[in-house]
Length: 341
Image 1 (cartoon, rainbow, N blue to C red):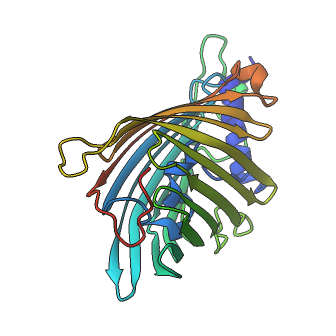
Image 2 (spheres, rainbow, N blue to C red):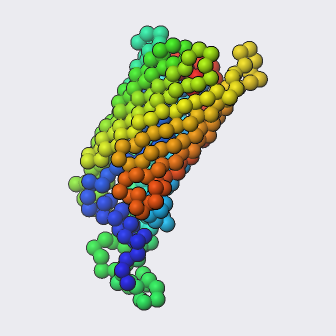
Image 3 (cartoon, helix red, strand yellow):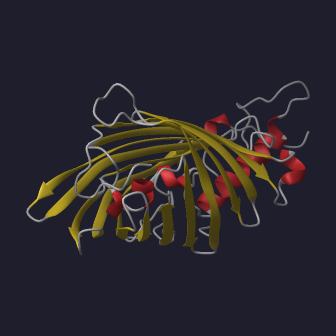
């Protein structure tokens, strides 16, 4: 009996992990506009409020395997006034697991930045993000064609493969850096652009040799928030591109935010409440649709990727589902805080 579809998928993860660096590609989220500090450390602390908590979950390509890509991330960031500037810092974590071999990547990152005011409306931030990067897989979960007895797979039979049967793991130090520019066009509108690099140390991630280092990754992001006075509608365009070795990703689109209830001017009885609908296009890969509910610092969102790449025949168009939850404490504006989202 030949290897099952799931085993083939798992084998591809192992081979790409062990034998080649050309399959390297980092995590990416469809609602990237809400995971800024995970992409660029210079953005930590740039939000309306004092403290920000965030977590999300992504399930991708479930139509191809019973063990698809599952990614969980969590983040916290805040800021402190230091001298004439702002010190932003935080803590990010993500875990990605996929395939029968449970190929996993874990990363803990500490974004730190310092921002200065160029003028009353414009700020420039420089950041770094030291981190620990770990990946592993469980070979003991796999079965092979020569282990088929005609009734079931017997893992007691030698698989005669060059890949070892024990579980594998490697942990390395990593480093990222970034620059972030933000300017307020009015009291209700702002625009930002960021450039960041990740895996600057090119950590060696091979299980057996020191030849296989992670490709360095260049990311460019742009975000906007545009609203007219007395309007209940806010336009939120967002774009991102990254290049990591032979891998490239480009996504562009916008959120369309509709005010449901305005914030009280003199009391805290009413909080600003809105609902946002977003449409995005990830070039040569997927259309992304999302919905986000905002209320009093709380954000709840969900997105759906409609796959249009060559994988469509296997996914049936179901690319990924993503969910996030965020909360911001203290609505008072301060240095580094953009206008109301």
